Length: 133
Image (cartoon, rainbow, N blue to C red; front, side):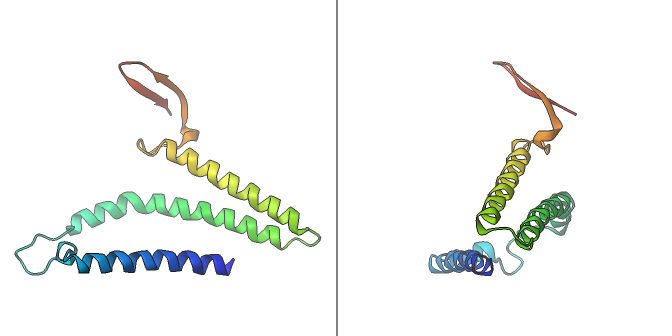
């Protein structure tokens, strides 16, 4: 598990380093890091506060959901008498449940609603609408 986490982190960090290097090589860093008063700030304080107000609850919800899945895997591996094949089957089950939850949340992403909140969908050639609670 630790090796996978380190590999994932290394890949993400190397992508950031490569993108920063390419931005520097092609002279694009001033677009990302404006200096002086001749440039408007990239984000205003009000925009950052609004972004945080809108996204932090959803991020906290996602992290808590992921924590539950990870705790299930940790609990599964610490049960005595469970074979390696059973642990693998349990891990596959947990990953399928995680994918199902992510797909359910993704279907309502544009509306801010999850799949479980939608009851019916009426598709009309002229108008597509969804009835949700």
